[in-house]
Length: 250
Ligand code: PGA
Image (cartoon, rainbow, N blue to C red; front, top):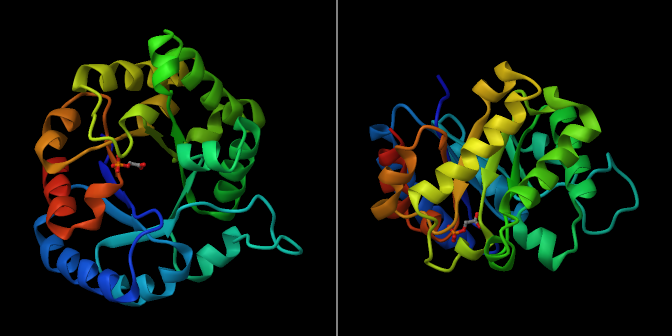
């Protein structure tokens, strides 16, 4: 039995004031959420505030990205040890915005995944195809390539205890959600590909859906057998919406 995970990706949004209000709302509502695990991923600079406000609650927190390097002359980077220093449990790696705006390759993302795991963080590996790739019929090839980069680096056991987020790029922030059937198809493909190498790892692997997930569409997505939670962008910025998705995950 896989415990569902609902993770909020705040991206580059919020202020100290708005984050305080958002977390107050989440803390008040989270009592109703029992089954699913819940996490938020703030911009780095707000992580200390989030730690202070969420310490001792049922809500975990994490980073949106991480360096492959341990320390040293890497201007602008944040290490795994720094995230752990502020109580992070999760870290997102390979988000499509990092891949497209910062040119992150499959190999770099795989190294970030490995660095996070080695440090004791739980990496959330984002994979997903663009609209052009979907229309070109290469969705599975793209997702397989992104997934295989991690498996090639460290073997399939690297996925034990990890999390994958399937996020079709065309559904991110567009209001255009994959249908539950479209999402399930890719989730089943991912699990099947992992199962070819290790069925126990595949069975335990949490595969989240991301891309315009909202309270109104979460329940039918989460009802699918291979959808184990969500990575939520826009809807994670409003306590009521995010809690609505958490409730659906229960
Ligand atoms: P969205 O973003 O929910 O705003 O579509 C999801 C994501 O990018 O993780």
